[in-house]
Image (cartoon, rainbow, N blue to C red; front, side, top):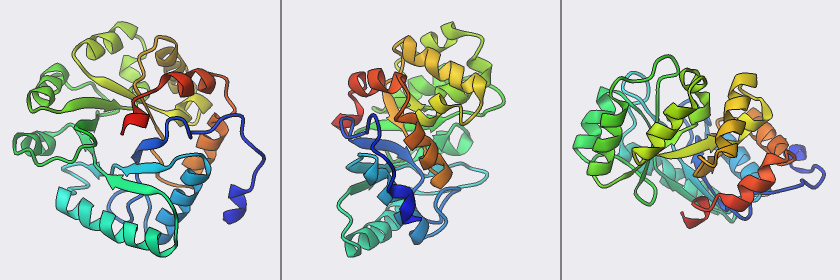
Length: 241
């Protein structure tokens, strides 16, 4: 596996933005890394690609992953301990990626959420846009958090309406692009939507959304793409985290 790290020099890297603010590297608590060894492989690869800080964002979903801040922090401590033992020089923190459901709304009302620098990362259904999206964004802001929509390019119901993206942005929502969307990893339609969001200047954060090595192979591929030059120059919020 380590041979994957010894490839020719890339055209670009992630050193300038520094922080990956969306990943699933915590072991055994969602559909990302299954164990510590898988976590370490992902961390080492992300470090090679130029990141010096990783923010783990495990899924929180009422029907599947009922992760609590306490469970996430405990798993983070275990991972940090292993990273330290192996003398891997990288900062690791944790927040969460919240699915908009009743479980999230309950946790939000109780302020029982994990954020990074007060940014709250959330995702939507891939099938239908929630009817109350603006209301939830407003609730997040009223609680004192900055809402960040994960991978807006992946919601196909937005693809025929650029105006909808702009409406959501005007409500005070930040957008986080999955960098590998630009490679076509999720399909041509999502690639096209990603390119459109970039060209319109609607992207605020870049994230790997890394669950496994295939994602990181695509992430490495993204660094040879022309749009990355503009993105890596203009995306500034990652580096503030």
